[in-house]
Length: 109
Image (cartoon, rainbow, N blue to C red; front, side, top):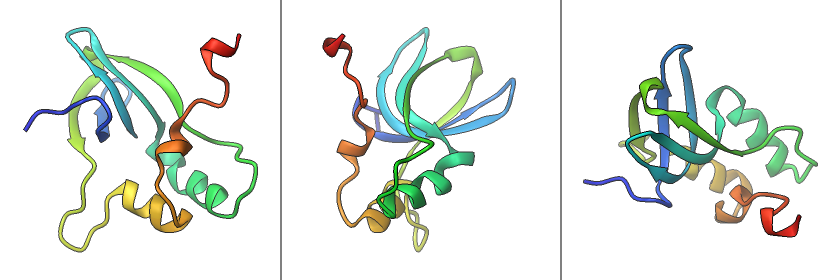
């Protein structure tokens, strides 16, 4: 299976150790570009979004150099364990694609 732009992924990083969740924009020889959030902030962001509050956290577009990437997983359910996308959609009651869009488009500048 090949990861494609638009796939929801979990990226494990090293130096320092971090885990990111988001939507893959590009995977290349230089690194990974995605629109997402650190997994340490995911649950707080999910709860804020589900309550319809103005979020203090949220996804950002980021580039991570390949030397920091340890592994990339497709965000998918495994048995009874839901995917992060599934958990977010369940909390919101709708699809998450729009939630990951930038608030201010580059074109609006």
